[in-house]
Amino acid sequence: MMTKKERQMIEDLLTASALRSTSEVKPDLLHPGGTDKSIVGYLPVGECSDSAHVQHIESTLVTHREVGTSCGSQGGRDLYSTKLLALKALRWKVERVCATRLRRVDKMIETAEAEQGIEQ
Image (cartoon, rainbow, N blue to C red; front, side):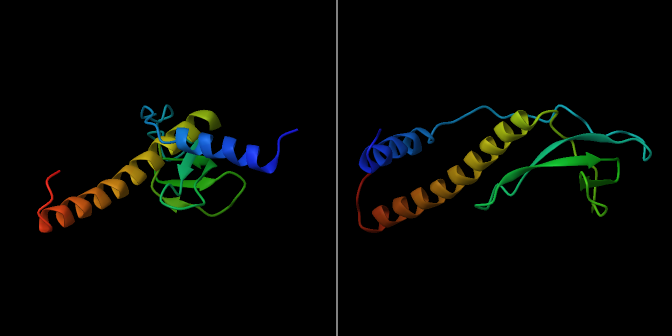
């Protein structure tokens, strides 16, 4: 049995290893061409929030909605055939959001260094 300190060390290592780059995963179910046709699959949502997740979605040419609900949103969506693919796509999207935020901070650091005459 691991101690609390050992469990924390493992979690810290796993968190550090999360800073890696993965490949983009594109949807493999394209929304249908007719208004009377639909597809069902998975859609990653909320990549800019702490509540990022995958939804089970039905999509037509003009709308999409979560499976099991009656109201939807405008616009058909391309979907992922499996939850696993959608989760991999979600991870890639979160990576892009985080990389953009980190780059913004890097630019601020570069500006501050230039203002202080520090060479990079």
